[in-house]
Image (cartoon, rainbow, N blue to C red; front, side, top):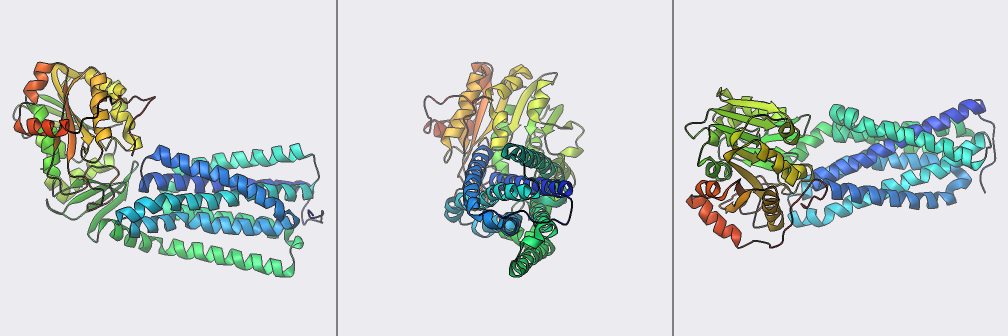
Length: 522
């Protein structure tokens, strides 16, 4: 039986406003938890489209389960709402730390993390979804107890406050919580707000509905949860340092969150320097020279006075370009100014790239490569695509037929394009999709591979330098408008041998990737 109406400490109008304010706050917190899980899943597992779909669909399903379960709790709606909000604050607030801890201390065990990570995200999505789903039925009872009205009107009021709160939470996450507090502290702060809002609503408006025992139980639960969240917030910096050491090793020199991504630099010198971007090993001093030589030098066989590098903010591709006499201008277009700044000023990284940014021939543009190409003027003899792995969802448009069409517009008639296309040995489908996409853009292609790899460098899904999934090679595609130009550019032993090795993995019938039909997948 639903609780009967009781006298409130405020007027019905004020009480109604406070309940809707509670709905607004709880909805904002709930959406922050959802976005936090999506962001973490995309960062820790990769393939943001798949992870977002799994997290959100599971959470919406769980909300339905939570709504059904809440029907049994309506007899003591105030007490149960307080407990639901307390549990949601604990689970949602601590979810980021728990998931990152699992990644940090089990992620180096490739099979353990690969098989367990998605189940862990699903478990948190289910738990948070069930608790969020239980809110509305209980709030429906509480708002009706303040002033009776028809069900449709009450539902309209509740959902209006809920949706506006979701809007605020959705905007606060990327524009306020993430840049100011970060993922871990932002989740803890959201949990604290959730606990305070739920507790204030229950104790402030419906405290008389609670028995003495119920009041003390709910108060103790709230104090305990807030203590846990506060303690975690105090220790979050130490936790991050310990987790970072577990992920990257003990020699982390630089760890910054730029406007685009997390950038971590470890070690120093050619043999030990590693650059991680959003947890992915992007540069390894042990073998980066093989990658950059394999990418750059074949394309430089021919006219190369003007060179365009898309990506490559670390300056290492530009270093190889400048080894060739006759280069008059090198334009580097990179999205992350923080990486370029690190390449300019970090002593170890700038030494590795031979201080290329001191060379007046090198010019840097901070921009999205796709957008920049749409408005670019002039032509280049060589275009180097030193971009993140095509299997990363955020990079899909940079490996599309439309992107290569734009690149072709700035390519001189006898110019060449060199593209990093991911490892051939472990991701043949992705590699041959890149090759098919270049051909669909009207270019002749020579796909090839370079072996001798010692790290997981430049492979998007890899998480550590020694991860179980670290590939053994790099795949590249050299392209040009005409066959004679392409054959002259590809006339080197590296390309000839690499082309023969790559040909053995060819997948016939591979379709090109477009913006509206992306075909890359982790």
